[in-house]
Amino acid sequence: MKEAQFYEQLDDDKVRCRLCPHNCLIYPGRVGICFVRQNIAGKLYALSYGRISAQHLDPIEKKPLFEFYPGSQIFSVSSIGCSLACPYCQNWELAHPKSRFFKEDPETVIEKTTSKLSPRQAVDTALNYKKMNNIGIAYTFNEPLIWYEYLSDTAKIATENGLKNVVVTNGYLNPKPLMEILPFIDAVNIDIKGFNDNVYKRLGGKLKPVLESAALLKTSCHVEVTNLLVPKMNTDEEEIRSLVNWIADNLGSDTPLHFSRYFPSHKMNVPPTPISVLEKARQLGEERLKHVYLGNV
Ligand code: SF4
Image (cartoon, rainbow, N blue to C red; front, side, top):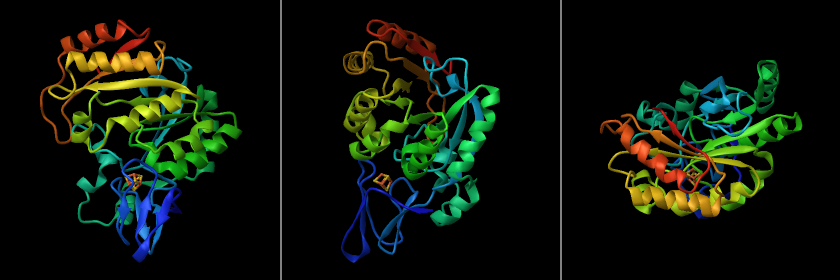
């Protein structure tokens, strides 16, 4: 673990985390909503620093990034925890490990679900994979922005070694930490989960900070957007049209958009998204955007 960045110390050993828009007030011994930032005796610690839940060499298109070094590979790493609570999460075992280990304290959960990989080791592994067409490191699978300190330290060393840094994220971060890490991020896929606050309310967040992050990211790195289409949640045609218009007007019509098909997972068991809904979404997307893709079909 490592002492966290972006927090305030308050009376009675409480702390206020300022990393993401939840701005959690955390009592001594407790963790924030993301599960991986703990108040220990009045100081906030990043519990998942240097703790890896998965590592693979993947095609860059799997992130998905279709317009950033197509045909290359990317060394992909993850940890645990998430700042949102999507009931259909495909990676819930990593994002919400407490669901499986509900009796254990956070440090024990981390011990049981992860292994150690220092920033230097992550970069050395990525460099070793260069002979297999690896271009860098992707921080992915669970939400990587709550892994901020590790991501930041690793991305800086990766940049010094000529590697690219890719972040696959829900975009739920406050502007100050995002600004500080921007120079070290080369590409992102940001998941905009719906285009109204009711959708985000069901996921335990808000839409506005996600849009602000997307716009800020677009000022300095390659951005692609994913929208997972979930029946009865975000498949309304007007809502899809609003998302497409927002991307075209704020990120540019050259921004790739991936409509992805939902399958039942975690706490949600409504049937998979009909292909006809994805086809309609693609048609709406192509009215304003140059690159629209369907995923999981
Ligand atoms: S990063 Fe975690 S602890 Fe910090 S505000 Fe967000 S959810 Fe809360």
